[in-house]
Image 1 (spheres, rainbow, N blue to C red):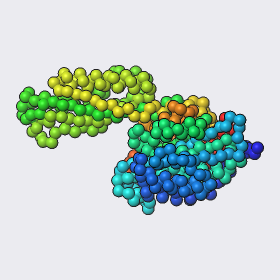
Image 2: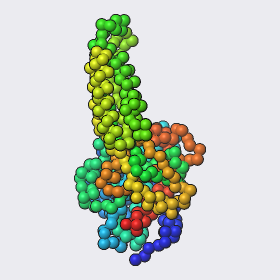
Image 3: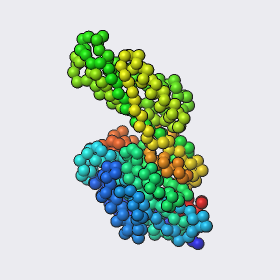
Image 4: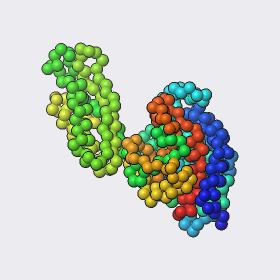
Length: 405
């Protein structure tokens, strides 16, 4: 069996990633020009499938209407039959792009503002490198191009429910996400709980409308809504232990349409983020009680619908330690950072409930960080040189993780 020393292997992959860089840029820009929303990624699915076929990888039978799964079969198999899974998400967001570069979205109200075009292109680049280096693979590499990360219930759980892991049985899974606050050429990793569980909150406060000059003759849902917003903050400060991260944010409020009319009803929506399932359950129950009791005390009716979203994303500590070693070998010690836990959410968490793995931040920013270059922004504009870093790193990580197994 031919296995290169890690230094030589890293250099070989780095050189190949540089050679194919412009090809991967073209793929990324094609996807960026034609963004598709969650569960609608028909063109993107076809592009991925065609590219894989061109590499000699036959896409597996579809698990969902969109998304692609492919397998690169290594030339050397251990008795364990190890499989490393690499995942990229492929959907876009519903907003209008405001960048000025020459490949802005051609689709009104749709934009790749979270870097999924970058993720997809990086994984395609990694696939090209790995196909050319099958002699280095001590097992198989499962390529997962997943739809619908941006819209609950997401695409990860439906992929799993459709038999993704039952069919291909990965021993480890790796994912990465563009982060503009990490400099291009660097990665950041976090062991354990890395990203939050996310739940959507929908409030309805119903009272009795009336003339604003005579509030004593009405039951004011606007006042009650204001008290509910204030009371919800007490949950984080007085119910959640100080060492446990938690967020309750009310992000929208709607009620009334005239300055002299107390409305009958006010609706609100928001989000709840937690880093443990225990805290999640406690806050959900306390929030329901708080809304009901505050509303009752002010003579109105209040209820909250809690739509449970993605779970906590928990990076397996052992795999993350291996990944840190691998990233250091490939990028150098100074380019491998430690990330703090963050309160954004990701449906990659579902994979990690079923298979050990890790999810890292791939840098797409510059040393002088541009405040307008943020995720989910109409001006999100990642550094394309990150495509070279991400493609090569994924390929290198797949080879080395199979060697670790």
